[in-house]
Length: 114
Image (cartoon, rainbow, N blue to C red; front, side, top):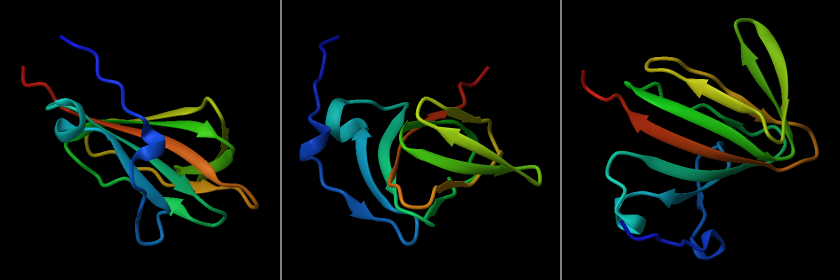
């Protein structure tokens, strides 16, 4: 299988209704990926990202800056290098800290049938 190099700086960013800006970086059109979807997302102060609850596995990796993840009535501080795994039907909200732009990598993978 050949390698595909994608210059993510050349991909367009799209506004996402109160959830920052997003750029798809891993999909079938870009590199032939059929069973996975990846995107980069930028959140400014007070913006939040709440991934859709889905029958899929999701991984959210914090690439730059700091943020907060409220889970089970408690706020958890998160910074560069933190990862959040969401199993099927799980949900979370990520919020950028004040005065920063938070950069996230969001990977979505469908469940593999048994």
